Image (cartoon, rainbow, N blue to C red; front, side):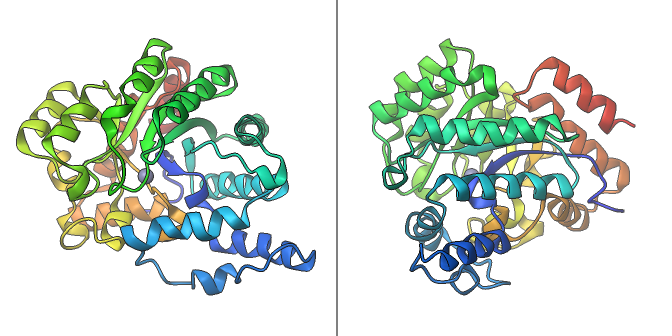
Length: 333
Ligand SMILES: [Zn+2]
């Protein structure tokens, strides 16, 4: 089966983590030529074939390296376009990208500029592509409440330009999620959809944290790894959408064992809509087509089961009914 030509939906992809190493290398070369960077070559920093980033090495890679390299308007535009092209080339027909609004004072870029620039790239791409993309704005667990509310305000401001929801992400070892309640309440009140990184690591999977997060009424949750039984029951009862990321969980050793041990095997029987997703294809190196190939291989899915799995994600997108209709037409062909 050709998994690249299978029409696919990607719902859990971080913009900065989805930039390929080759693209980062091109940005670096351009900056090096202009004498604008003293950073190491991305291909040395993140060698080809190295995918074993864990929670201790993953987050510093962004704060220390990728954000320092992509630190002006031209690199933001170049890398965003490259990410969109990569997803389209992999057979993605609908994409929800997520990003944490980032001000870059050294380049005079505000958070508003950052979001506007990202949306401009997306809307240009949407106009000339069969893949349609929306944007989700992320609250980082490191943020305080005013910063989180600022993210929600940005999402409201840019809703008519393609922002569809709010995410909670970041280092699961950091932060107290209970402080974000007013931010998620405001998002809901303004008809924004909510997705949350959920039970990603043992330290972010206490009963208290998980019940607090569920009380924010998320429409989808991501990863969903270390979930106690009573919380699982609630998720199944509410039929929450699940963003499951296979390679990322295996490479980062977020689960015990390997592909065939992934909790996809448990959730697939529950009736919750599942969107297989890549999380950070630039870091973990497995395109969405490869995630489908791995699932089919390790869980014995035949062609029809694989197509049904891909179609199952339609119901849990944050896009409009019209968009769902378009996807049904494409994916049931
Ligand atoms: Zn993620």
